[in-house]
Length: 517
Ligand code: NAD
Image (cartoon, rainbow, N blue to C red; front, side, top):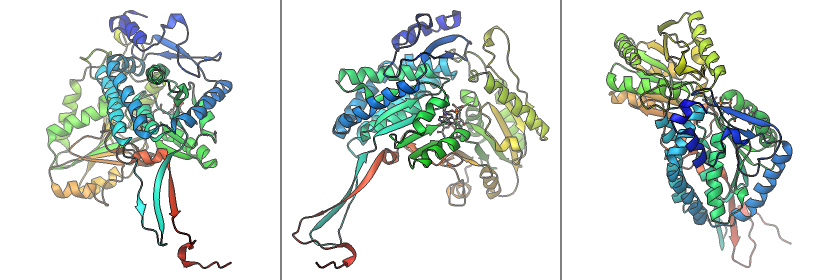
């Protein structure tokens, strides 16, 4: 490893997380780690090779599925509150390893160290949530229409849950799924993004310790590694009743069809194109903080990143100036250095997409307000650092309708009432996160009403970016319709069964039907 990694203690971090140094060969992990082909993981921070993992081949996948299906037979019989206790222990281990895992997230994915820590905190929070939930997997009871009968519903685990995740939340999305799935009695097979495989191995090592300390089967948590072809093992596999897939809409459309073809269930968390509406009654200071963090945080690589700012014409120039001024203060650089606000994009392909989007907005008639560009020089050796850009555009530009996973913010102007801004906000195919900045009660309530935002998340006086684990998370339209994390999202990981018990000596039929023999 070169100086930068050493300076920020990456070697030590890898050791704490049970990952061998790159020079020592492949990383260790559970069940899936045999095979010949290796997947290399390069850091977007400094371009260095961090480590290699073994790509899961078909034979290895079969072994994983054997381990998972066997483990399910044990795990489903463990009482839910005891399963909750295992998740509690997992949360405790995450607390112990928070700094190390947060640093690996930052180094392998490129988000700031603070955001890396925040991601691990989300894992801890969902563990706490799941522990409480493990005593609340309630069904309902109903009154039977037949005398001497009792009727109720209960929830049983589904079996093996397949999790496919994106690079930008390399650890939290897995935990959102897996901690709920585990308390529900499911076992999990996870394919992390091929761009962040070491985060996957680190997480697997942490849960493996907990399972081993409790003499539980390893197959309760399984990891497979590789690109989409490895993901396809799961999407085509009828032994997996639920696929939870997070990533691009392009991926979601393929996965949804594969899983539906075998009548499996899918939980889809796909792309967003999130907007903040800024009305004449907005608090400008709050708007600037929310919009800038939303647009440049994680270098614009959050599913909830702010991509469109829909500003009323009366305050357009004022807001524009405030945002452009704020961008002048942004520090771009190594995300492990807490003085920097913006780190790198994930790889050079992402840089190309960013450049193409900036070119296209100009071709469509847009006006660049804050120039973008790729940074070069000693501090930006990986070639993945770009400048956050702002362009004035029109709502119907093709590029504005498209999710570009990079720090590009489009300023759009509206006139008239807030309903015109809501129309613009809803005019895209994605439906993840949305926000309105206003102190006007009528505008806020209209935005949240049935005539308002069509997104899964609608905020007032908060930006689009980030969410608390207590609410159900997900979006509508091409964002896929899935819900994860809080509220009653747990129900997707279980099957519902209606039970009717006759405690008489008669057999009355439902709907008053007579069947005399
Ligand atoms: P991606 O679609 O390229 O890959 C996501 C995952 O899907 C990877 O693990 C990949 O290997 C796998 N995959 C791709 N094609 C597949 C196929 N045909 N079959 C099975 N698996 C397949 O996405 P990405 O670039 O890693 O992530 C960025 C995207 O994810 C953005 O669009 C972002 O908005 C979205 N995202 C959404 C949410 C959400 O909660 N809505 C959260 C994070 C990221």
